[in-house]
Amino acid sequence: EVQLVQSGAEVKKPGESLKISCKGSGYSFTRYWIGWVRQMPGKGLEWMGIIYAADSDTRYSPSFQGQVTISADKSVSTAYLQWSSLKASDTAMYYCARQLVLNGAAFDIWGQGTLITVSS
Amino acid sequence: DIVMTQSPDSLAVSLGERATINCKSSQSVLYSSNSKNYLAWYQQKPGQPPKLLIFWASTRESGVPDRFSGSGSGTDFTLTISSLQAEDVAVYYCQQYYSTPQTFGQGTKLEIK
Image (cartoon, rainbow over all chains, first blue to last red):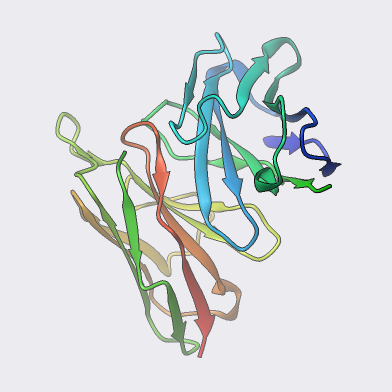
């Protein structure tokens, strides 16, 4: 079965660092791009950025550039999203999703989401 | 960035009736070299991740019921549910994948009247 499995929910304090993961299985991980999408409580979907699993070529939305870091480790078929210093406004659900061609395909498989709560 | 604007923000339709959701892009997402519109529709039910319904503006994803259809070209697109079922209650999003940053519409909440 083709799937993306994300790491579990996190509760963190402002200023803390965090790295969440998205593990692909059932397909050739290095053939696809993995994108990250934010959904703040009760709000819509926001495209954060995307990484090509084969060579870690990464593109960011200007809204998220410098705020997060996207990385991947093809040896374990996993993509990551990390923060160096969390803010309360980072509280949201974060989804990963795969895309066969950058700017050439839709997100056809999504992870189940990782809920991040940042509160003092 | 390409701005995607959906209308309406919310919609209530009776069971068995047609539901229509519109999506407008701030610039064309039609790639002239292959005549394809780089536009997708997703369905998100409460507590679930989004699910791909339609890509290339009008191609249904495998397993999606044929009551869902997509149409439009260039900057104006429509998602139509021909006969609303109870399980179609969800929020629907359009997305352009023509250029980065890829962008989503704000969502349309579909409910039963």
